[in-house]
Every structure is written in structure tokens, then in C-alpha cells.
Length: 131
Image 1 (cartoon, rainbow, N blue to C red):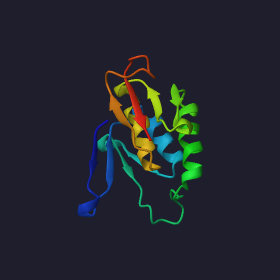
Image 2: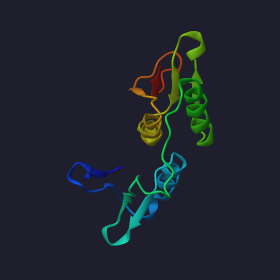
Image 3: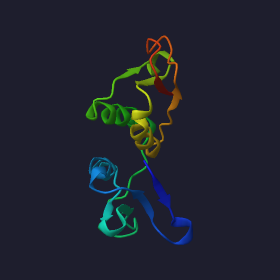
């Protein structure tokens, strides 16, 4: 997905594309980010988070974070293997098609790392892992 971050210059954060990005924009809204479509530019911009009518993302406590990432994965039908209770990792099975999920996870403090060759846990299929 293409984006342009102009916030350091007093501008907005933009996602490049039109109505085909509606699903991604609605997923961002679930996390408290509100985007608006600028049809002439064929791009979405992030609304000012200081406005009173925008729900801001909250800091997620570690105990809640675990449930939250699993909820996100389950809502989107992403195959996962959770070995964190056994001092392991959380794995999501798939390749680059999961980049949008990986980006959403970052917003709640879960950082996935890509392993193209996978491992035993993913039966050597491409997978992403996080602690």
C-alpha cells in the first residue's frame, strides 16, 4: 500500500488510492483512526486527531494487548499459532498479503517479523512471528 506522511511539514498522513481501500479504512476506524476520501486526489487523509469528535486510540495494557491482537486476527480470519504461554512466539501464517495486519498490529505495540522460509511451527510455509 502506498502512503505519504506530510505531518512533519504541517500536512496530513495520506493513503494513496480510492474506494478500493474502503476495507482498510474501516479497519483503521476500528482502532480509532478516521480517514476521509479526497476524490480529486484519489487518496485518503487522516483527520486531525485533536478534533473532539474523533475517538483517539488508547494505550493498551499488556494483559489486554494479547487478547486484542488475537481478536484482530480472528475477526479477519488470519491463521495463527500462539505459543506465547509456552515461552514461544505468536505466529501468523502467510506472506506479504498479511502486511496490512502487521501494520495494524504495530499500532497496538505488537511487532511481527517476517520469516519467508517459515519454520517447524508453520510447516515451513512463510510466516510472521512476534513475542
